[in-house]
Image 1: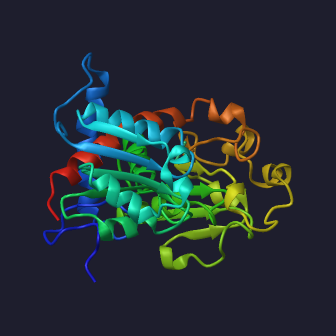
Image 2: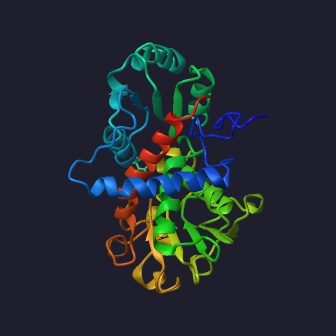
Length: 317
Ligand code: CP
C-alpha cells in the first residue's frame, strides 16, 4: 500500500507520522528548517512562500506550544491563518469531523493542522480532502506527534551534530506518549544506534525490540552515559486505570534530579516536549539548568513547522 504521506514521486504531501518517513524527507525538513531559523532573527520576520494560502488550525485538544508555533510559522510564511475555536464551533452541536472539514474546505482551506484525542483522526481527514489540500498531524491520541518529533531531531542535531554515535534516553510515560513514538521512529530512521526507553513497567511496555529500542526499568541504567535525556510528562488524561501509585512515588524512582543527571554524560542535553510538571518527572533546577534545551526546542519548533508547511505546499498529490 502506498504511504499516504507521500505522492508517487516520494514527495511529502501530508505529515501524519514520522513512522514510514524516508530518511531523505526527514533530512530535507531539518535542512529547510535550518534556513528558516534566521528568519526569526530578522527585523521583518516574513517570507512570501505561502502568500495567498489559507491555513486552518483545528485543535480539538488543548495546546500552548504547538498551536501557537504553527500560527507563528504560517504567519511568517505569509499565509492567512484561521484558528477554529472548537469549544464554540458546531462540533458542540454534533457536527461530525468530516462535515466540519468539508465545510472548511468550502472556505478554500489549503492546509489543515489537526490535533485530536482520537488516534488516526488526521489520517481520516487526509483520505477525504481534495488533492490540493494538505493535512498536518499536530498530535493524535497516543499515536503520533510528528512535528514534535522533527523539532526534537532538529534540536539534537543542533547540539550534537550527528546521530551516528549518540545514546538517547526517553524517560517516563512512554505508554501514553505520542512524542515518544514519533521520536523513536525519527531517531532510528536517522541512524541513532542506542535509543533507550526508561520507566516503570506499568508505563513502559516490556517488548519494544521491534522498534529498535532498549527497555530499561531502572533510571540509572537507562540514562547512564547518555548524550540526550528526553523527559516525558505523566499523561494522566490518557490513563484509564491506576497505573501509578502516585506522582511522588514516580518522582522518587524516575524523577530527573541534578544528582541523577550526573549518571548521563557531563555534556548531555536535557529535553522535554512540555508542558512540564515540575517536581514530578523533572526538578525545576534541571528544567532551568545549564544542560536544559527545553526553550530552544520551542523556538526551533517555529522553523521546523515553517519547513513542513512550505515543503508540503510545494508538492502536488
Ligand atoms: N509539546 C506540545 O505538544 O505542547 P502543547 O500541548 O502545549 O502543544
